[in-house]
Amino acid sequence: MGTIEIIRKFIESNRVIERAVREGVERLPLRFRYGISYGPTFRYWLAFLKESENWDRERLEAYQVEQLRDLLMHAGKTVPYYRRVFREYGFKPEEIQILDDIRVLPYLDKTIVKTNRPEFIATNIPKKRLIAVTTSGTTGIPLSMYGTKETEEKHWATVVHLWNKIGYSPGSRTVLFESTAREGGEEPFPWKKYGNKLIISSNYLKDPWMDLFIEMINRFKPEYAIGFPQTIAAFSSYVKRKKRILGGCFKGIILIGEQVYAWQKNLIEGVMGARVFLDYGMVEKAIHGGGCEHADAYHFIPQYGLTEYVPLQNHFNELVGTGFINYAMPLIRYRTGDICRHIRKGCTVCGRPYDTTAAIDGRLCDFLVTADGQIVSVHLPLDHRVLKHIEGFQLYQEKAGEAELRVWTRRKEGKHAGRLLHEIQRCTSPLGRDLVYKIVAMGNEHTRTQTKYSVVDQQLDMRNFLQ
Picture (cartoon, one colour):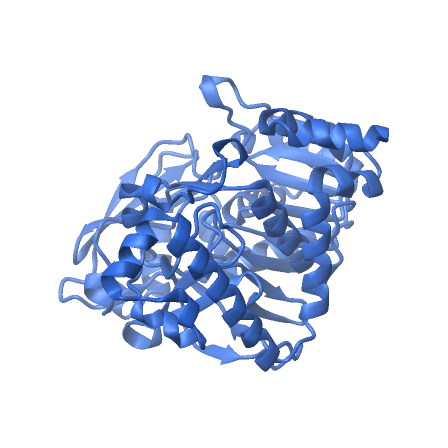
């Protein structure tokens, strides 16, 4: 057995060890890295995605029917929750013939999964093979999910395949903007460099660290930047506000995990001198999608899972997903809470037969409600100049017709928050003007760039208004 094979088996034997050595693995040449860190499932899935994106829609749907039938049969045999549900509904997975046959089953949501979590775990997968991951809880309900190494490899291969549309590969020089907060209350580290990766901590996006980060990026000369929109927008805002020079070496900026607003996209592209590329995914791994390399549009990747569109009010659709890649804890007809409008059966620009939408309009919680039950979509093409002295903001609603504008500012003057409120009302008019706003100063210590978050902290059940 060769040295690389010995290392690979050693890593695979213990997920804790694997996480610990992943940084070391990143230093290896790509041919070794793919064999150890990403494994045969990663390589197979990456090749499969490249080949199958040339299939026509009929062949893709036949593949989906096959995958759906296999997943449902597995769930019916090994997952306690689905054994019970299938019995109650008289559902026979082996009889699936078309995708619409799944519509007889009830929807899932995060509350159901969290309440019954042990019943969603497949009984035929050994516990030592399970990998736990947790959602960020932007809807107020964090959720722990289980997958396997094969699940993670398929997911990462999907991401790499998608990002490769703008030239990204695991070997690209990349700056990652992410939270470096660690478990156990340890202090997050401000930055770390290993191999072709430079990590900038979103926990330190403030003076005096910002100028150091700009210098490090200019020396490192990354090809790509990856992070949450709010985080990279905050960094870009500092660069522009302070008139710093950022080296023009970027080929693309990949934004993940949150809705992207027009003002964020324009600000980031203007400062970093490269196109913003969008990625849409979730820890639950029910749906994955992302940008088209030729247009500002999202493709939903059909090999990853089945995406359904539940009609809501005003031409909105809620995205419902059934993921094909996670047999450890499968989610069938999972209501994501994410909203989009007009779905096209294929991309008119690149020609792929993937379901396509111009934008993800946000989550169910990214709406406000007026006193008479009217829906206000909080899509904010802000004039970014109103954010000059503002570290961050969030709208909070727990009563129809009323909302708090929570503002983190660098200065105590209330005029900056007032200008921001006026701009929000402009962007959400005319319905937004029917809301009564209260400005709440949150101090000058902004923490909102550290993790994924929603622009609206919505406490109302939006499905009561969007049906």
